[in-house]
Image 1 (spheres, rainbow, N blue to C red):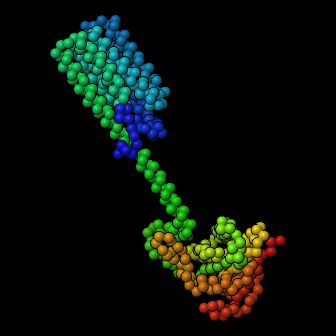
Image 2: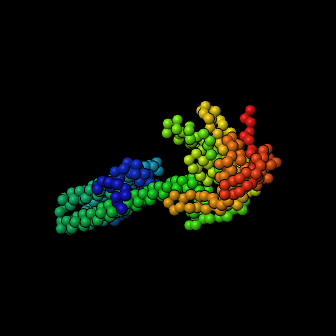
Length: 422
């Protein structure tokens, strides 16, 4: 788990990543500030109590003991006020170290002055250590410094009074310090591991959300939104019957000879310009693009959302496409036009493929629309009688009479000319 946060200092436990270390300290500082203030108030109360209890329990020089205790009480009061303004973990920890280190030195001085070294010095030093490890929650590196201060000081006191009891107390205090420091080390390392793991999980969650959003965008690029939702919901086979749809096929006339004269990139850019425009207009008219094949384009109205006005919307879309191609051809100074076939009727629509999904249409309506396109006229919409009867009040058309369509036989068809752009 520790590898999640990257390389860390074995002694200070700080993260090698400055940003991660900064975030960790900011996270801990939120709770550590309250802990520091409560510790300072507890220290204030203890030192005020000591001002009364030590002279009562021991025969001491109050002129020395009382000022020391009151001075430490004042220092804790100042620490409490400073802690209210210390918003960073570094400042909080330095305040805690100052309070705790001063307390350790004060206890050692009082032990010598009041003659507590024989029985009370060890418990007092351990109380100060408990404050460092538990109440003030000093980081390991600072707790190590604080513990070193009292341990060296206590050892100096024992050296002045080297009795067997004092040596035993020094041993017990040293062991307690080691245990306290080891516990502090493990707790801080654990807290850092938990923080690093949380950050890792958060980063993974964000990455997964972004990947999911990307996959959704890609899915929506090839499938209608409603169909994509059904796939995401767990449907594995999607095939629907639509009684009433309008299918459009469009093919660029004159594109093949033009492509032979253009550079490959220019050919690609031209198709991209045209088909991007087609897609924008399909969305504007509420139609569904089905696919492109070379320089051919297929779209449908009434799928996958049934509607009653799709013939009019598809015809209006087709007229927009004629206008767009005419504008692009004029802009390039090239001979380029569009041939479009439109038919209205039932279709089967569904998703095919497992690796590369494709939403496609099948049925006689698709075949008729394709035949109308191939036998159409450049710069006009070639529509079936079925479609014409649904839009005749909206556009003008010229009858082509019965036409023989491959695989379909003879049927009446109509031409809808491109709008005038004047």
